[in-house]
Length: 191
Image (tube, rainbow, N blue to C red):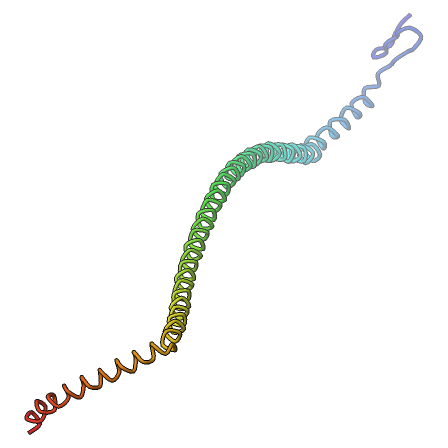
């Protein structure tokens, strides 16, 4: 069996290579590869690089956002802890202020009670003095009235009347006797 050049025989199939077709197909393939390498691969490659750059930027931004989120959470936790500490301080100050206000109000109430007591005692003393004056006045009036009654009783007896008339006359006589001497002594002074 003679095989022509360029034809391979394998098994049942006879494969023959037709060199002008092979070379034209090879040239067509080279042109396609050249066109792909010259005009299609560079834009696709730049598009892929841009996509990769976009993805890389998004990843970086995502990492930055995650870092910022972690910082924000830490700042929030810190602010929350600080706010709770300030709240505790404010509560303690409010408690201390309320205790101080209560103590001041108790002192003020005690002072007011003491002032009212002193004022009440002063009023009681004043009323007591007034009552003593009123009682003394009433007692003096009653004593005068009683004395007047006793004197009238004593003067209304005939013996007391005669004694009082005699005493009155004696006093008049004494005045008359002493009056002439007084007149004599008084007259030279007037002259």
